[in-house]
Image (tube, rainbow, N blue to C red):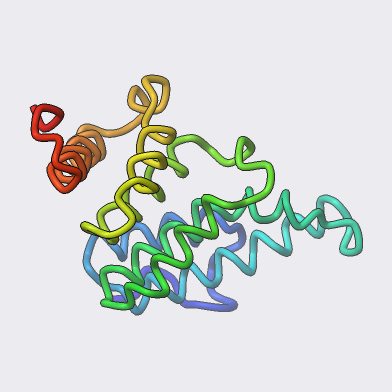
Length: 168
C-alpha cells in the first residue's frame, strides 16, 4: 500500500513527504520510506531555492534544514542492515557546520542512534556525543519511547566503559 506516489504524486511540500516516510517507517516499509525521504530531500532543496533564489542557496542552511530527513534516512539504512551508510549519515548530520542551527532533538536522535549502532566501539566519543546531545532541555522534548531508548543506551555505554555505578 502506497501512501503517496513518489516523484510527481500528490505531494507538494517536503514536510508531507517526510511525514509519509515516517508513517512508512512505522509500518516497517523501508522501500517506500526511502523513496519518500529522497522526495523530501529534493522538495526541500527546491523550496529553499525558491525562497533564497537558486543561486543564493546557503549549503550550511540547506544541511541544517535537511538534518531531520537525513537522520530518518540513516535510520532506514540502519534498520535495513546498511550500518556503514547509517553511521556515515549520522556522523554527517552531527558535523554540520553551524550545528546549533539543527534542532536539538534531531541531534539527540542522531547521536543516540550512532551510539547504539557503534555498540562497544569508540566508547569515549560516544559518551561525549551522548552527553552533549541529551541535556535536560532536549530530554524534555523527547517522547517517552525516545527517553527510554536514550537511557538504555546510556546504561549500555556505561557498562561497556566499566562504569556499572552509572547504569542505575
